[in-house]
Image (cartoon, rainbow, N blue to C red):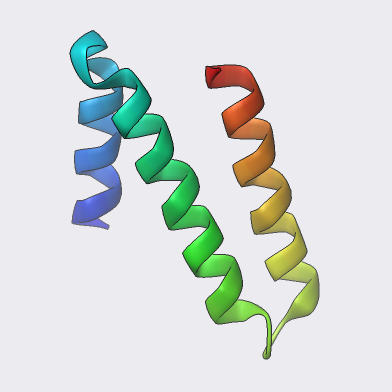
Length: 58
């Protein structure tokens, strides 16, 4: 949770925008990978969230 808050704070800082965007998307994709074996529906939702986040940020 602390890592997510740090990523959000970094995202707000305009100097680190691309790094923060990559970090948030990477975190979502890592969580999706972790959930893939146990809950494929949630994994797909996390992947979709990462793609949507990147499409808005970039």
